[in-house]
Image (cartoon, rainbow, N blue to C red; front, side):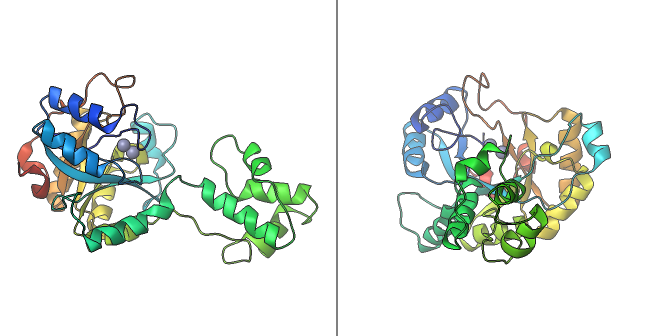
Length: 290
Ligand SMILES: [Zn+2]
Ligand SMILES: [Zn+2]
């Protein structure tokens, strides 16, 4: 089985039909397409899975705010410089047939829609608010200040430069701080919000590639259990056996299932999808039924 893969609907290299063929060629019998923050590939994927003799599980990888801060010791011991700035929550809807109309799934899709494309819409919206308030700010000028992801400090710098405020602090205290006139909330949900939205549509969740978050396995799994997450992606290509074992051990203690995914993005990145060693009885029961 392979419960984590991407197509051209997000940042994958291949279209849905090609991903399905590659999965089937590697002997995958249960396949989930989990594009980032979109369900656009589901109908085609369900059809292609059928053609290739696989069971299809509709999935999506939801970008969330981290639920636990990274720990220096854990980052060091896993050889990572920093933790990723968001947590990726895999959601699965094993009982949903994409060609059928389901109001609960429609509601979930409506919840998901504004979250696509990450943080750029938020900054654009804040620039528009400032424009309406008589302080035109160029979105491109703000982005030009950011080497990686763009945020409010970059916007504040531009506001100072344009002479709208004396300093960055004033920008935050008068205009762009939480709840102020030019403030637009993050589109990233908390893990708890995402869990709720998925559950309301009859789905289950599993935390993707936990290694990237720099949190010790016991703390992490305990928190997931508290948040109502159903499982953890213990078997991901970035995990060595010891880390997989640790996660499975704690998952069992906290009555969480596990999920397994190659996180396939394309043949340019990885040679093969599927081919993940896994104890089938540890996998979330909803996902193993063939
Ligand atoms: Zn991810
Ligand atoms: Zn992924």
